[in-house]
Amino acid sequence: MKKNLHTSFVAIFALLWLAACSTSPPVPADRFYRLPEPQVNADGSAPTTNIRVGSFLAQGVYNERAILYIDEQYPLMIRRYHYHFWINDPADLVRDQLIAYLRKTETGKNITPEIEISGRVLRFERIISPQQIKVVAELEITRRTSAPGAKDVTRVYRAEVPVTSDKMNDTAAAFGRALDDIFGKVVSDTGRKG
Image (tube, rainbow, N blue to C red):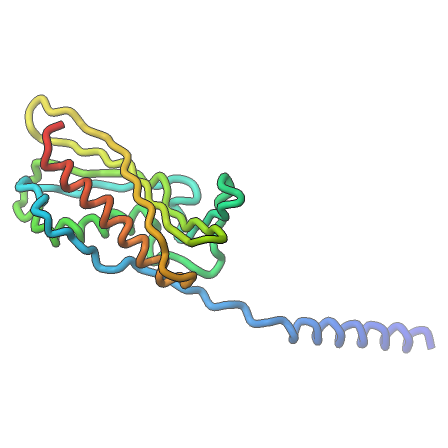
């Protein structure tokens, strides 16, 4: 009798456990995002020099493909989305976007570069507040010139762009606009001395 009661208890527990598992909602599908085609300002600021794009680096969570966000109420806490990812890590994403941007400005057509641009991703995150959603991109750009006696120039560039909706696709588009803004400044600065 005790054996039958024990067996019945185990069977009922197993059925309840299986029933609880079967009522769980399905796990959301992973989603992957790319940046839009770069948009170049036609302000004539394209340098006449050749530009080579070197390596870009990112550290810590900025070196992972998960899209990062910050709740403005907790500005020091960086979180990541579990099902929203970039197609590449942000350093590669930014480097490839810069190459595409420079191709549109028709720089770097010759083989021998006069300037090399490399960089580091300092911030690449979505900021959420009750009033709005925006993105922040912040890059440390180093410009090396092959001219004799020229010094490397390092500068931090930052852009904040509002997102048009709460959809992640619009967030990716806003990151594209932020990088367009930064790259426009980089290209403009590249045409200047020092």
